[in-house]
Length: 397
Image (cartoon, rainbow, N blue to C red; front, side):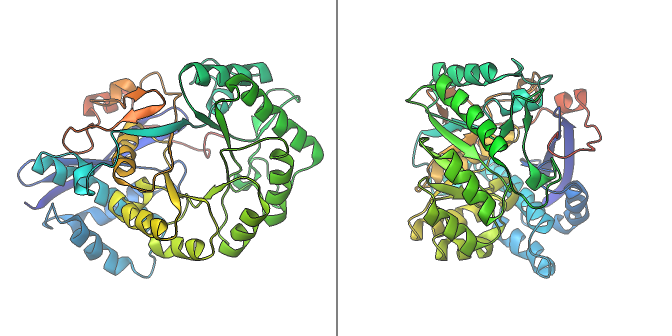
């Protein structure tokens, strides 16, 4: 079985586009994956399309051989879009191989450790504030944030994650200087901002109640002193499931972890085991976040295995479409040292029509599918019915 064709497809996803890779073997077997141009740099589609001809004629079921074949000439630039492109190829080939064998992808990964993957409600209240025309009910006050917490509790979720928001000065808005919104390259905050951040978190906690844990994502919105100021102000009298942040300095992150009373989760923007190892060696995190869409699920299993050797649990980074969610469910199902999986409960009005099967949520978990491959695939006619559009901003901000 040889690779015959590789093509990219995309569709409108509101504030971003969904992007997919379809690989076809010479016997007609198809494999699908999802890749991302919203959180990562734009232009990944062009990189994939430029590399795709190198796949033609390679063994369709030998994904690790294909990975090393493609990786060799990319060795001078091993990370970023190069790795993200290889991750897309790897994930589509895993789907293709599993389909050809008539087995679910988690069997290729060693078999499932669990029948249901625990999830937390990610971007709880966040999407409804940032994109009120796409996700309902729209939130424009702290009362709306509290109501989102109440909804999560009623739906049976044990944990919710939100971001940093400014309230009390017109429409609520997300504070993301690490992404240039606003442009504050010093990445610091004042007491007024801290009070607003706490008010947002307290409203969510009040709604969710004492039995639903709260996670907060600080993203890249600080340097070492800024992160410590945020953490000390936010975790005072406020127990967190974890505090999430991003840093490219293992020693700095280890220091932050030592100073925090809350578990630290990080590393979602890293590529490959070589980038993760210095953080494990520095004991820089309590939970290692892995983006299997970027890295590829097979490579992500290697990272998770290394984390296990350092007694670190892992959590899949997942804020994409239903296809990526199902890819991550297989990864999470086969990973012994899983902590929890991210999932966006708020969905677009047309999300369900884009895929053959949607994730099945029950009691705060997603059921692990046993259908061949990832257990779902995009409907090409539905993708065409929602054509991709030009995206000028970043993360919809």
